[in-house]
Image 1 (cartoon, rainbow, N blue to C red):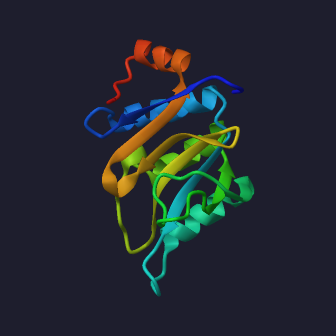
Image 2 (cartoon, rainbow, N blue to C red):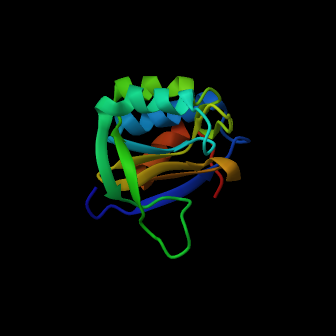
Length: 157
């Protein structure tokens, strides 16, 4: 992206339906997003077939671990090491069953769940959701924000 100034806009479930969040993810893929991360969660000591299935499904797309900007992290840890998976048409489609109510899916389940989806373009955070806070962030250029406005996306300031 070079020296282009990046803008930040927030969105919530009140401004973005589940379908809107999927359209926003699709838009990010079409505009260069190539990696994603999620927190794969389960209850300690319990079988977690949903979490295990996620791990198995996405194993071929695992890129590795990197230090990246995240939206929710321990105090004093600006860029924790997170797992990253390749984001493309195939992996985008595979995410849908794990987030049935879109990127804001908040479905704690003893069988395992995923939360806090993050999307990266050129190693920089482009789109992220903090599931339990019901807050989403998009980072894009001014031109891209105008494009999203023209497509009917609604953001807070």
